[in-house]
Image (cartoon, rainbow, N blue to C red; front, side, top):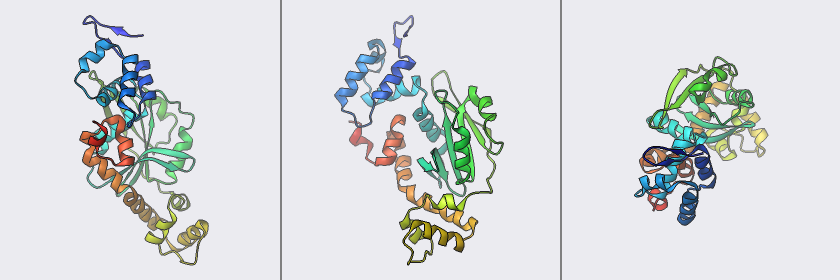
Length: 274
């Protein structure tokens, strides 16, 4: 279905934007992007963006009309996380059998799980359990209309941010509930996320040890849980500091749907947006 207004502009639908997102790649050939665009989006709408870069057109359509995880994630980064001066943000960190959408490391370690209106909540409780074994705080980011549903599924210690789109289709975030500090973090789970090279750099590991399991046992016997937690945060902050610094320095030149790609690849935006 398309919406035909009095000015005869046919605006993209949810399905149009969903289809473009499925076809989109940051480094896709420009001619392919263009062909997909004109096959999917009505020319009356495209005429309003005639002078825009092809990537900007995709970005506007996807961000405005297909509110999926990548849109919420990048908007949250832009509005809430990018202004922080000392913390490091991490994308898609594997945690146990789950994967944290975003993590924030500074004095505290925080995991953020995004649940859009396109998601189901069947794994939410398991994800929260995994995150609380590693991180000091956990937040759920959900739509304003799903806050009550989320509250029924999560513990009181878990924080909540809600979002909604305004009339200009920009996402606005509200802190609904602050997260409380978790005091039962698993040193074993934290150390399983650490690389062997980082064991040698950040811990005084017995140099005769070669197996990861033996190294972890040695650290647990030699360091308190509080000390392991502090070192764990320092390791993650150092590991991802370069990627986060690159995104922060260049975010004004990077489109929201490409945040994660540039975070990972650290290529100058001008080399991609030609």
